[in-house]
Picture 1 (spheres, rainbow, N blue to C red):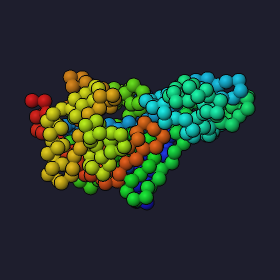
Picture 2: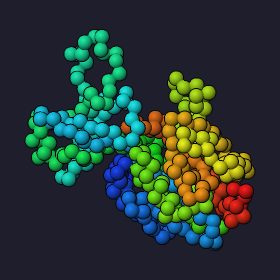
Picture 3: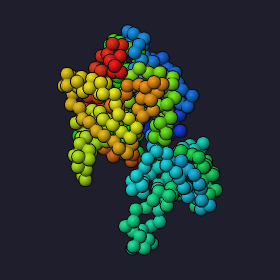
Picture 4: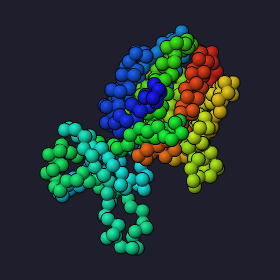
Length: 356
């Protein structure tokens, strides 16, 4: 396992749902500490400042470290857990999945269940079961057993899914690629830039609360006050059965993804063209996508102060917002290479042209 694979494994296996990011924050802090000057906002985001050959422009990289998960909202008298989502979940992916509850006394394992199909009337079996009708079972027979295990209302719940290298050796399976892949991209870039000059100041922000309310994007933009923002994310791969190219043409191993618009933002067009032209120059394929049903940290950062030229750059991933998603190493490496090439072009004169 090389250093990049090990980095992705460590980041994705750490826990840190929206509002409960402390465990992943310590992992990220460890990796960013040797790469620049660390500061933070007041809600848990980390910001790593790496000074190049000039103090300006201020280039903000943003990747959110929170993942989707759940929180305990109620415990029944007979020892079952009712929960609410933190982040967007598709109810159909939940049943039968193992979950990890982070308690004051340690980790507790459970499974998401519902009424057994054998006792569901035939006319109801084909209906979609809603999350509100599900529960988490930790094998207890009473509420008291949960209390003895340290389980309390308000405890965070994360998917129990470890990192795996898949059969082809280049595809990786894990929870939380959304958006630990973006955080890894920042770390990989800063590691590379230790050996190279860049004509700007870089502020790499590992944000919190993106999956909940984009909160970390708002506060870190206040800290950084950027001249340009590059949002590092995953792109939604549509190369799965049932998805047409018109719906989504992004493919695994097809190269980095540029988001042409989402529900909160259209990228700065000159910044977009710089990424596309640079990709052509260095021989990296580019994919494009649109996302009508979601947004990124860019939705807040591009509106900071009088406005920030912003773009979203992503690594394609299948099955995001589920217990396990898949990305391809070639896409990751190409995204790092493209990001590095563009950052080295972002001098003051180039950045000023974005808003002319």
